[in-house]
Image (cartoon, rainbow, N blue to C red):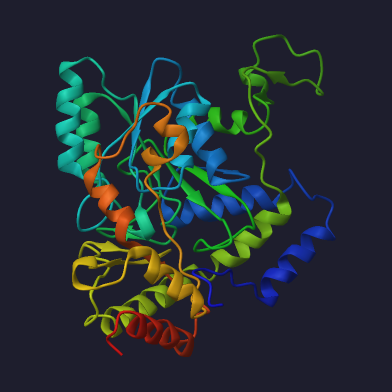
Amino acid sequence: MINYGRQDIRQADVDAVVDVLRSDFLTQGPAVPHFEEQIATRVGAGHAIAVNSATSALHIACLALDLGPGDVLWTVPNTFIASANAARYCGADVDFVDIDADTWNMSVPELEAKLAAAASENRLPKVVVPVHFAGQPTDQEAIWDLAREYGFRVLEDASHAVGASRNGEPAGSTRWSDIAIFSFHPVKIISTGEGGMALTCDEVLADRMRALRNHGIIRDASRFRNESPGPWYYEQQMLGFNYRLTDIQAALGASQLGRLDEYVARRNALADRYDQALADLPLRLPFVRPENVSAYHLYVVRLRLGEMAKTHRQVFEELRDNGIGANLHYTPVHLQPYYRDLGFTDGQLPEAEAYGDDAITIPLYPTLTEEQQDQVVSALEKILDRH
């Protein structure tokens, strides 16, 4: 089976992890702040807060932005469920903005129209979470302008977009947002096994998130509320969580970060090759805006079902039968049973629903060989009767 994604672990990664295993610290040592500094420097963010998953990063980011009961978070339905669930962890409500027909990112016209309607009903969102789907940055400047007009906070879910850029600005810089989130899951651009990171240029938000990832504990004596009885003293000033990343994971991430440019270049080269090989098939191929460089976490094709006799499910299952590890990213979040129970129904977000009806993720990862890629193309040609 040629899987849709796969990690790349090399001897340098193994050596970096072994060095930590032989050191004095397995967690809360020097490897985590070193990794944070490397990522922050790479993208130009002021602060980086490493945690044990991107979901955890989304959660503490929402808390740092004071999202809570009575508030609303808006995101897209075309995302992993964590983008929406983070709001529910905070007791907030969730609503969705439909996606752009070309990029499959948040539609700025849809967002603008929804904001105008919400303003008239005094139901504006507190936080908006655009998602850099498949590795392509969203139209952050326009979203940021709307945030200044309507007063909401912007939390970029850039989980797919480590190494991507827009108008030369690295994804994660938070030039056009309050906080950005990266994921280091094994199938993402670089990996720590499991892991995530929150980035911001706001020192107050950074301090809150550092405390929230570690049980709400403050160790800076200048910020204590009580008089310190001695050097052992610390304070829990908020209800936090154990969301810490280990030094073992950070060492792996720092090692992989050294190959980030190589990984993004290889993913783009493979995507270009797919673009050429699949151009004559009844498929809609990914579209990347000229001002963007996609990290190409995913390569998604959409079936032109009106031009074929087969169904979405048939094509998917036949790919699997031919040894191609196809997947779907994603079933629209608002159609998941949990969100249906909250009142969401079919027909509310037509572009995202149409996407979910015909999209298929095909294999793309740095160690995918051209021979394996040719197998994917041949399988699609055979299945779609264009062999």
